[in-house]
Image 1 (cartoon, rainbow, N blue to C red):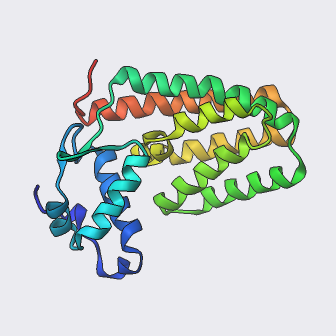
Image 2 (cartoon, one colour; image 1 turned 90 degrees about the vertical axis):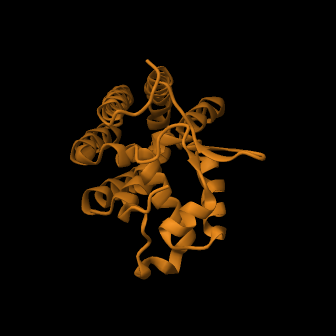
Length: 226
């Protein structure tokens, strides 16, 4: 594994080593620097990033829970492969399920939740930190369906969110402005208690992002099945 500058951990970041190490490896996976099926060797990563093996092991646990890598006994870790059809399926199902969940959630939403959604939208608009944007975006989508009374539906959505979907902004950094505009439109529909419109907007938002992710992967020449 080559020692690239993109994997280097800056000294000023050492106060949160496990989180930073996980971010560095995640971004290398999502950007295509680490290819699907590629082995991730702890010692090589530790040397490249400039840390001990402990934070690498912690990062592997987190990335495995996110569905980005596979850790097998006696074989170690490798980047999980996704086919284009799998990615299409995930975003297609999300566009359907989250539409239904948002429609039900908006009907039951109170002012406290609506104010929280607005605060999250403002935070996303005002941050230039991609990692912070990712975390706030996750919270926004979670809050949108928080008042949905269908627990099984929310469970399905949570399962679909595991892995790369929650890190879509990393793969589409040039579309954050578009996402912010769409978030504003969704918030407007929520505040107007227009559940059908809010559901339709979230569905289009997810579909647009899904198409962008697939195109981004193809442009980077990721080794994905057709």
